[in-house]
Image (cartoon, rainbow, N blue to C red; front, side, top):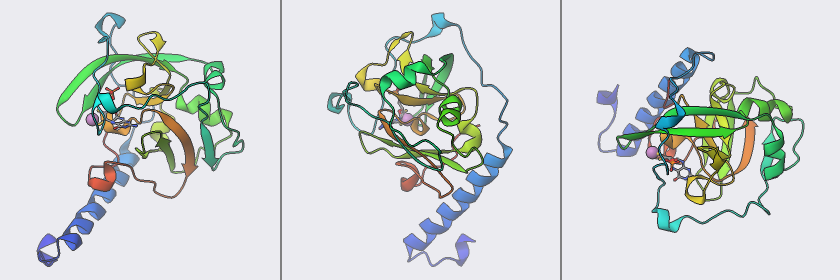
Length: 215
Ligand SMILES: Nc1nc2c(c(=O)[nH]1)N[C@H]1C(S)=C(S)[C@@H](COP(=O)(O)O)O[C@H]1N2
Ligand SMILES: [Mo]
């Protein structure tokens, strides 16, 4: 297929490759097993503090004020009222100790707690047949996942690490934590959640990284 492209037009090659990558994403999403759990580990293996990463240095993290923070809810949901930190704490809480893997070639075992994204989506009356759940963050790091992954039991809206409230570098007051996807698919400092059928993409995905990026 690439031999049919005019290599003097790198943009055409890039868009062809992105189209193939999107096709791969869709096929992988179809193969996703919604009930298969990723490996978990004993609490004694939790790394403290966790290992930081973002598209900028930890010194440039801008803390979010939990008292004034509101989570915006939009798209294919019945109840679009904004959420407070206390609202998230009132949902049933889950915990998991899982491995976090970054494409840069490092990983660590972390212990995360908070409501499952499933319980949140059910609570707001989301259309669970929609294709995507999209996230916006305080640091302009848009992200999105397929609905099957959103409903997976190891997909949490994490508010705590190792039993303590999240600290600023790791996404206070709430970040996504999934056992089934690479690090960059887990947005920190979430400010908005949208349920949609329109492909939302993401920060690294727009630069050519795979959108599915998981199991
Ligand atoms: N809002 C936001 N979320 C983000 C990022 C970011 O730059 N901004 N980086 C991602 C990447 S590449 C990784 S590996 C993980 C790092 O999470 P950690 O700092 O909790 O280990 O956060 C992800 N979520
Ligand atoms: Mo990463």
